[in-house]
Length: 550
Image 1 (tube, rainbow, N blue to C red):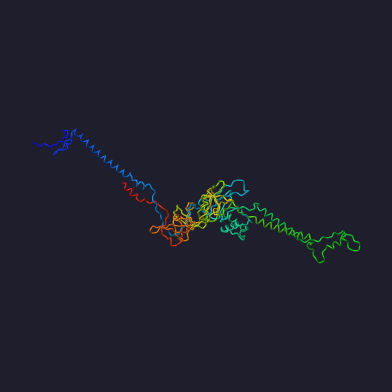
Image 2: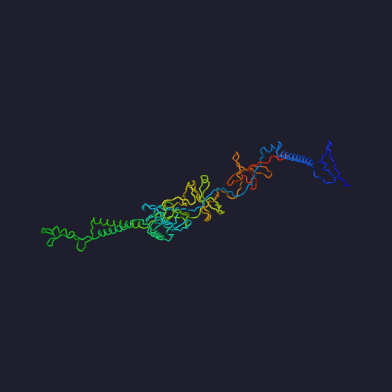
């Protein structure tokens, strides 16, 4: 007979049987699936357990939040009260200190010229027209080269720094004539025996040769077809003839005679007649030839003939001197250095030359900047400059060569203002065009020629406006203070943290530092720490209070 499994039946106090417990405590045999009554009892047990776990979790979270948010009064006072102050320090340094000014500048040519030819007065009412333009932007230009043709007349270059302000004609004198002579000689056209600054025959020949070299005839200084010289030569010839006439010997006058061959006149039988007497008086002495008239009227006539001849000859010299080629101001552009470059072309063939036809840049590259009044007061010629090109990633050294004393309009690179006589403005002469903000023009020249690639770049200028004479003790500006007694001091810290006041004399300042010299040499040395300010320190006990509240 098989053995039945043992079942332990739990009874409640009221005698009922807990089916779930009875089903769970079978001994030695598998438990069958619970019936409907048993499943309902298991669900209630699991819900009870889940509720207990959730309550424990909420209590844990609540405790954590209380730990974070709840603070003790001591901790709150420590966190809301003013922090304690501690000293900020810096070391005393020994080095060269330079006061610097940093600003921007533009790399431009040392000279920039607008070529804006204008027609000469009397050449016609029509507007000037560009009839030839043989150059383009970027071209290199040599001295004596043809730049353009306006209304059939050439515009060419010559070397010189003085701007053209008048037509140069034969007989003219001055520094501009001397500049023309030098420019022609450099092009291989000698000016002969002409004195420096005198437009003579040699200069006329040289100028005519330059015009022929570029394929044009020069304009005549006197546009009369040579009539003035012809008239002067005729005047000389007439004066020469008059002098010859006045100097010619006079023939002796012959007394009139009668029909009988005797001298006309009556005689009284006692002597010669009156006519014979007159004839005898006028006749020369025997053995002497008839000579020129010697009376006062003849002498006056001779002197006047000689003076007329001298005057005629002088007029001829003047007429011949004035005749010949001239250099119109509208037909030449003086440039300070060659080769020059065409930086811009504004005109076109067939267009009206109402403004600049083209712009030339010449000479070495320089940096140009415009200063406000405050910076003009501290910057001057001779100061050292570092020119930094961010585009090229290079730096070069240079010096300030010009700080203008008058305000002018800041120009953009290549912008120019026309000058008189068709000559453009020359930046080397301190002129500037454009409509930029007014400022004082400053020019910086590099110690070595700037590369051509720098042209037109915006660069940084670091200008040393002051410097110490060799290494000096320097401290941050905030380390120096002035007392009520007028003494300047720094506060030095000893190795034990003790503070002491050191009287100093302040010198050059720059970049946030100032050079100082201690009144007593041993009171301050490089490496000493000085107080430059104060900084908050953590309050004592704040950390402990915070930790005790946790």
